Amino acid sequence: MLVDGVPYRTIWPIEDGRAVRIIEQRRLPHEFVAVDLGSLEDAAAAIRDMAVRGAPLIGATAAWGVALAMAADPSDAGLGAARATLAATRPTAVNLRWALDAMQAALAPLPPDRRAAAARARAAAIADEDVAINRGIGDAGLPILAEISRRKGGAPVNVLTHCNAGWLATVDWGTATAPIYRAVEEGVAVHVWVDETRPRNQGAALTAWEMASHGVPHRLIVDNAGGHLMQRGEVDVVIVGTDRTTARGDVANKIGTYLKALAAHDNGVPFYVALPSPTIDWTLGDGMAIPIEERGGDEVTQVWGRASGGGLDRVRIAPEQTQAANPAFDVTPARLVTGLITERGVCAASAEGLAGLFPERAVA
Ligand code: MRU
Image (cartoon, rainbow, N blue to C red; front, side):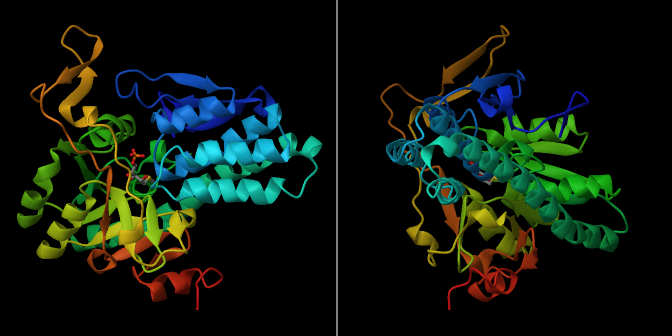
């Protein structure tokens, strides 16, 4: 997407793929900074410490991490160590495992002296595939927004989204935002309610920045405002992303998504989840089996932002002696999901729905 008129992806190779450059997301929205990753350790730290985040981008960064590792040590032991290091970075987004499996399948059959070049090519292909997939999600989701717009006589479609499932969470386009960006391209009026998404505020920092950068009308709301707005008819549709969707359509996404789904259900507001197929965990049926990341309590007891003096700083908001719990994701059961928006079209959040779109993956 464009940043000050310049097209960007969130990750791209430099030096013929001997390093990669990422947008340092911890500096946004205050500073737009790109940093270079030159080693497996750099890539693992970027995922673990959330310089990059969002399920598809975690997968793409992991793929590049393997490529960087293969430049240093293309042996079987090197490949195994790279997989283990990257797999341990974040537990919930299944795109990480998907990307590591894809890299393993491409590299393991090759002699070590051919692995570095093959790894660069496969990582680049995974990134390109992500862009195409997300564009497909946009095309699949556009009719949902266009139909609501038609019913409203062209008045803006009020979309509520949670966390950042925008282009910053992917290589480009985003998942939940792809239909929004396509709607804007097609002249469908939209207005986006952006949940701030405590504790890390990916909505306030990243989604709001994306919407502002692309001139998409939006307003930032506190996480607890969604139910109130739905009761008053001010939300036409909810679209969120997901870090892992089970084969039966249960969905893990940023903490607080479940409460939005409950409120949407109670108010008859359609609740869609946008996802690329690498986010489907075909090995799991029950969403309660999805591993949920527990993050440090400091994210809850402190907030980060630009201080009145101009510098970026952390501020403590809880008593010094107060401990915090910080589950980073929750699971929305399939029964609360109106539909899954994938690159192959929209389906019911059910085993049958997913099997209909992905017959080659469905288990009997
Ligand atoms: O902790 P994060 O910022 O990695 O969480 C991101 C989300 O929850 C997104 O909604 C999800 O990864 C889908 S991204 C297209």
